[in-house]
Amino acid sequence: MPERSKTKTRILKTALELFNNEGEAQVSAVDVASVMGISPGNLYYHYKGKPEIIAALFEDFEEEIELILSGPISEPLNLADNWVYLYIIFEEIYDFRFFYRNMSDILMRIPQLRTRFSRILSHKEQTAFSLISDLEKGGNLTFQEGEKGALAGRIAQHFTFWLQYHDLRHETTPPKILIDQGVFTTLIQITPYWTRGDGYSELLTEFLEGQS
Amino acid sequence: MPERSKTKTRILKTALELFNNEGEAQVSAVDVASVMGISPGNLYYHYKGKPEIIAALFEDFEEEIELILSGPISEPLNLADNWVYLYIIFEEIYDFRFFYRNMSDILMRIPQLRTRFSRILSHKEQTAFSLISDLEKGGNLTFQEGEKGALAGRIAQHFTFWLQYHDLRHETTPPKILIDQGVFTTLIQITPYWTRGDGYSELLTEFLEGQS
Image 1: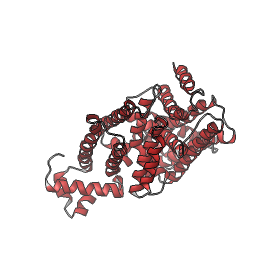
Image 2 (image 1 turned 90 degrees about the horizontal axis):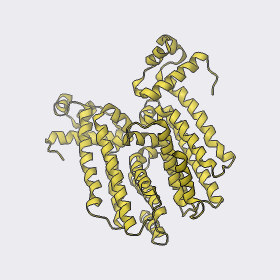
Image 3 (image 1 turned 90 degrees about the vertical axis):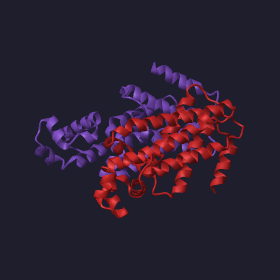
Image 4 (image 1 turned 120 degrees about the horizontal axis):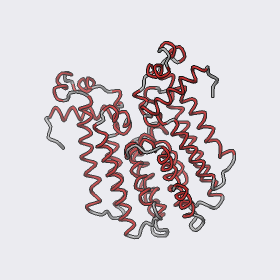
């Protein structure tokens, strides 16, 4: 994280909470100041406006998610760790949910985030590809031509739109269940490539039992 | 389609073209009038504003997509027709791309479309479920517990976010290739469940050959 004054840190923390809970479009910089009990002028002294606050929050998210995505590339995960790892990714996305929920609008308003977000997506695909390649090398997964790349792209797309699709399809869901479903719908995309007989159903059963 | 005056029809046609090509956020009702060579007052006489134009375009899309989605339920498709059918869906979505590209923003501005769009998504899932159920009954696909519903949901999610994800990941792509990729990445989600040996690879090979 970049070094920041105490006030800057408090502004970002308050803004993130408000954006996530009320929806980013519903919250102004003045609202953030008012919740903090500081004057708008004081807030504007630290951040010129809402786009600057969003950009700073994005920077934090970028740093964290890049760190997470680089994890399994430097050190291959064992089988059981795979879904713990998925939880970490989904929780990180959930923590930054205001952005994921209103992505196209935010990227239109703050276009300089577009290339950076696109880089994160490309990194997500690479990490997914590397994860399933490790499982393939270990003899756990088998792919036909073209399937591996398509699966990696699909997983990255799922990370990106899981929240929005869920919001469109369902009423509000408690966060834990929302994240469980994100992980589950990722795993169930991977299991068809599982080498049959080799723990295929066990993986899902174990996961489902862990849920109840 | 609802019956409309000639001018109303021209307004909608012009607006759809401008929204699709320039991006909906970049185009105002006055722009539409100016491209048509009519006065803003004349346009406002027919449609009170941009939200009303978007709502009318949505109505047309809704009617067409509902018709398409109801097709295979009333009359099961044979195998070869399946990807033709996917083309029809992706082309229909592509024709209404301004909406899919800026969905969360538009649904925030015109909240009455939300429930209706959510109903279309639910219909998409049902149709996908019915399509793969037919293939399962015909002995072409085999599913483990939970996989069929998850696949149907995933296909509907893919229909919904294919364009946005593509925009985020890639530079502009010619429409034909964009739609080909949408269809391909749907098919390659279904093929792992294909009863092995039973035309599994042939399906994809045939598709890929059709592309070149």
